[in-house]
Length: 129
Image (cartoon, rainbow, N blue to C red; front, side, top):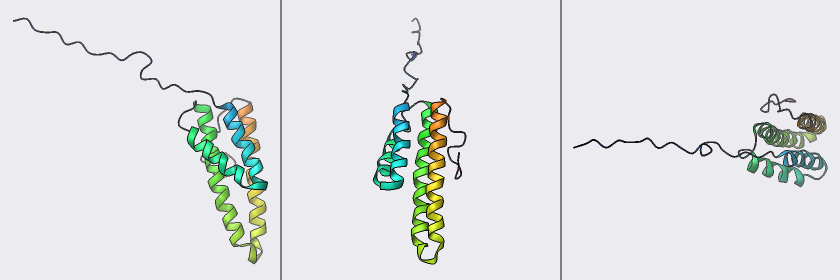
């Protein structure tokens, strides 16, 4: 009785490679929403939702920007809460001012890196990336 040959199934060449799209426009939109959020608040929430939903389905450069933006939102929210809770003892105004300056610097640095087509060096940084 002849032996049957077993052939290994080879995956299609593109089956294992995930399809990534560049989200340059969405990354820029989130930075703009964060800048508007300094004044109005709600746009920043919309921005973090966009960044969270898109962070896993994008190219590597946009992924670092989305990760940076998500961290910017949550750390900025922490700073803002601390500032609001300590405003009655005088230090809160300084903390709130720091939050605005910190957010501005992170957004501008992120937009400049995005414009140059560069990823964020340290997207998990508490400072300026």
